[in-house]
Length: 368
Image (cartoon, rainbow, N blue to C red; front, side, top):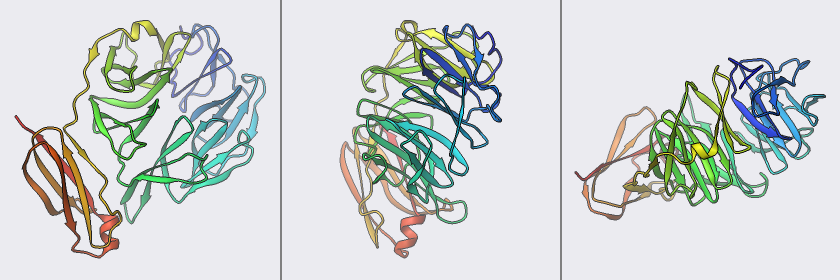
């Protein structure tokens, strides 16, 4: 495998017209294979920048974003490329249905004509990640609030970016993918799932995980450093398939012709039959011992209510920290039984200071 592609990196893998197409922001050239990876051909010769920030496919159109913020498209697998209009300093592209979305200069842009024209659909935020769930577009973002301080959030749109609903104003996870009506995100070495459009999250698996993933029918595959983690029942149970061979660091995944393909950093593209991946080593998800709900109201004037629930007895410690990481208030510091609880936080400072500068930390020590 990898004739013509040996030793190159692959941070983008897509499928189009019975071909797999791979690109890298390090190596020049967009490479395509029609024989399962045995032979690769550079289809981007002649472009001023043929590196790939990422690749997107809409119908039979392949769209390339380069690290130099240029956008190109081809409908004939590189025989001819068209240069598209590009929002200034575009950093990534994603498609939802027939719409193309681009993050650029603290804005999210939308194009309904394959990148010819763009309109702003989300403004004044640093968009960090975008994923889709059927016809719903989810965006994680950050908003600077002074020197080196940020508010992190998650919002979604179900009308192609016309209106947005803010669901989580303290979202510090990395969005991974969606499966059925479930969202998945990673953070702190763990995998989290949301079944309510991102309002609440539960930890389902602990391990060294990245947000490199791919969905194929009812399967979700996620890269971990121990192997490929996957589920076929919306995250209720998980399996892991250990790696065979020296793949290195995986930077992209796709499924094609009953094989799972993995693009790597500096070590080409690898593949393995799906029936070998999906029949190995069942693991049980870890049970999450608590749920922390969004405080209400938020923002607030002088006080807010924090609610949480325990699925088993535990020692609970809830602290309030300011933007400098200094602890300013201990709300809860005691052993509690299984059940639902709420605690009031009365702000000793002006409301605008509280709503933007203060953070909540919750620690659970399970019963031994």
